[in-house]
Amino acid sequence: MSEAGSETRSDTGAPGPLTDLVRSHPAFAPLDGGALDVLLADSRVVWFSAGETLVHQGDESDCALVLLEGTVAVVAQTEFGLATLSELSGVQLLGEVGVYAGLPRSATLLARTPARALRIGRAAMMRLCYDAPEIPLHVIQQLGARLNAFNQAIATYADALAALDADQGDPAIVETLLNPPPELTNFATAFRKMAQFIAQQRQQREEMASAAAIQTALLPFPLPVDPRGRFRLDAQIKPARHVGGDFFDALMVEPDAVVVTMGDVSGKGVPASLFATVCQMVMRLVLADGADLGAALTRANALIASANREGMFATFFVARLDLATGELRFCNAGHVWPTLQRADGTCEELRGNDLPLAVLDDAAYGERRARLEPGDRLILCTDGVTEAIDAAGEEFGQARLVAALDALHGRADDPAAAIVAAVDAFSEGLEPFDDTACLVLHRCA
Image (cartoon, rainbow, N blue to C red; front, side, top):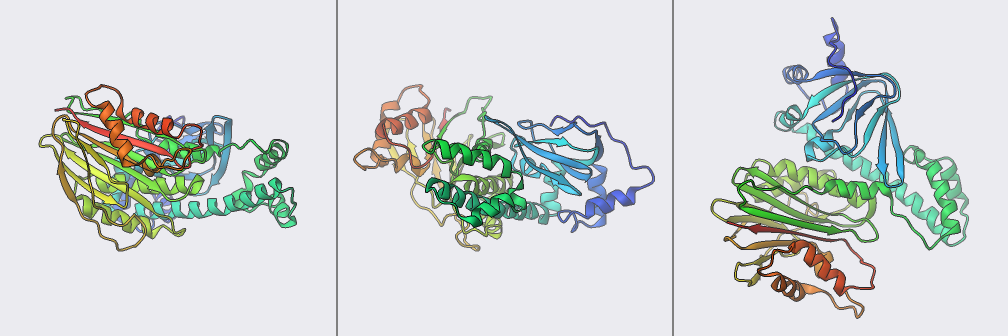
């Protein structure tokens, strides 16, 4: 985080007001006095002048901020320039998603007025997951509420775009655009300009920059590297024309263990990207301690389902490789079966799965086991690979995936990039209907 504010300046003689301000936020209201005192002792108050930057988009999410007073603007840098997403005032919790998910800052925060905030370091925020699990649950619920607001906004825009495309002028739609609800206020001016552009050039459509930014922020680049050279990771994702909800992750959970995941959220666009963010954040939380993967997925499913008011779901696969023994523990929540390519080039599927995430609140997941010997590869894909079609309507399928892996055997090429390239060649001339994502874990020694 780039922090332009001054260093700590204590609220001399007024510890009570600071405590009351923090407790007034619903995320911290359940904390008992002792836990809140410890949190405040590990945090510090920072001050910002009007025009100063609280955090920069793309920086490490090393802390969360509790805005205590003043007004800040949430600004996103897109390929089309700066976009002001919203302005916030009052007591607000900021940057918590990036801290919990281990993701870079997704937006820049600018002080519109002089502002005061409480800086809570990442370690303190992570400790709250165990001391007060209702806090990360509150964060997930708030993400669900934002998802619902985005759904309403997108529905209004979709109706308006359809009317423009058909040369219709529904008075109700026009009235909504002229008098937008709160969740549309920040987009009203931009939408009117976009409507003029669409009326002139209906054949050209631009994806919403916010959805693309969310999806990009989910990806764990640069990928983890083992200093001892015991494994290699390669990953590739190619978004379809409409931004979707494919996501993957890779992290070292212990000196001798690496975890890889692959997920695919139902739907496309901003709602899918937001739901993928929820899934990614929850998974990082439950997988960090290296516990039984089945129990971790069961817990994650309950948390995700509790904030899922839109009936969305996600297929998901997770595997944990013990680098000392080669033991591979994995769980599959309705995802495409991964492929194991052995050192001699032969391939097999890791079969068996459970329900996708968020289908049932009380779904239980079981852990399975396999072994990855030196020279073996684990290949994770989304259905954008296996279900890609050619001009004749034939699917790429598992057989072609195995053929692509056979062609790579014994070569040092990036296997993930080669698989995506093979899918592109197979579907040449056709617009992809879904994202194409692939992650390969190679056990080197």
